[in-house]
Image (cartoon, rainbow, N blue to C red; front, side, top):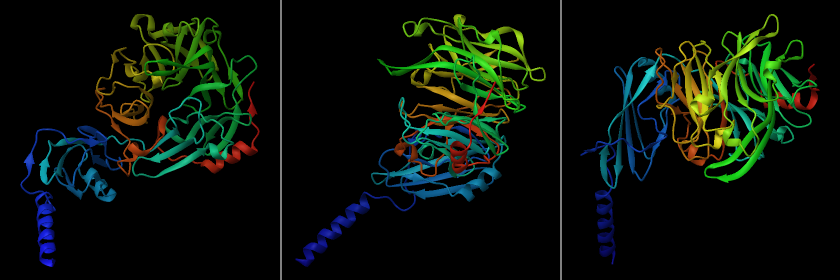
Length: 486
């Protein structure tokens, strides 16, 4: 009986050996196909200060070997399904290979056989990305904010912290956090509810503001800073959300009225112009130019809503602004005409170097997050030439974007994976204006995006860490009375 058992165990052991791999690749079969890695980090341009691009191999693999080879240094990881690079070795490799290409070779043991896939490249550029990213983590729903946070992530490692948590703020809704001049000492976000207001951060000192004067449509909504930090430009909107069943467009959000105003944070005064408050025109999504001498905004003729929502198409316009005199210009120029393009623009962002304006284009409307056709476009403000960013866009929503301080990088939220969850992607803009293939925010666990049930809204880059945290926001919310504006 013992001999029979020994014989059976020997057969099973030999069978396992036949269908398992050696500890390291031997007798490798080479295939001319890229490995099915997730996230898709194949052939991307990366900054020299980014956290490790950890990834996993889709499908069943018994073992993996990944070699990252440069001209003077290399890195080898032997693992199972998840490839996680040691952060110190990763930083050493990137620092040694700045301005050069890294070759990534993935070899996998599948069904007892070692398979070597076609290698891909990581181009390491000297143009660093800003070290910090903030975003709102929220379920991809409609009017639900049961567990809502605004977080800050260090892009050079995997450190993340909450800078505002609505569980500490009576479950109030929080709008997304934006920076001034891509710096952590100037930022703001809207905190809604009866005790809310706009939370303004200037050098770590928090103020709670009611950005509304008597004749405004509403309190401030979409906004951006003047480069001086003294002013903010905002839209003021009557926003209507509408749920419907129209293909993948689950929700429409539109304005029945909207104007553009400027807030003076020093004098607590709202500045207005009749050219930006026409009752027959919708004006929204304003931003200042890099030099602060102009305001760019989206403008559309008023239509009957919701019946004519598909006719709601916004152009990109500009008006002068004199910060010293606190005066607007006397005419409005159109840079991008919706009537000629047949599309609608929203979410304007000017580059800090003054060369570009990055914006979202959809078939119609102002809330294209559920429009699969939503794409990013880049306009050269010096030539007027528009780049449709075919290398960047996907077949799902790509929007909610912001620039790095150097204008060499931008980040945007994309639903390209599953159409439901927005994730932050980074794209490099070289000196000639050519934009490279984007890559998603690296995570310590490469299965993170498979397991998280949150969308990353309005990712914004900053060169420095914020000077406050969630506890400071809680104290501001509970103890400060909102300052009024005239």
